[in-house]
Image (cartoon, rainbow, N blue to C red; front, side, top):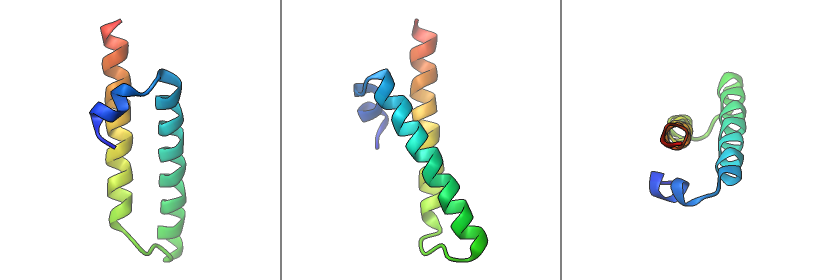
Length: 64
């Protein structure tokens, strides 16, 4: 999801996307520890998505 798409979401939807991404990252890390992770690059992509969402949230907070 691109930053522009994240900005178009409401604050509640942004928070929901952040929670979903953090939950997915947690599950990916569990799989990685157990050696069952099929797509290791997905961890990096989810971390970047979390960073994008947090950046948009902080920009909106600073703009207020």
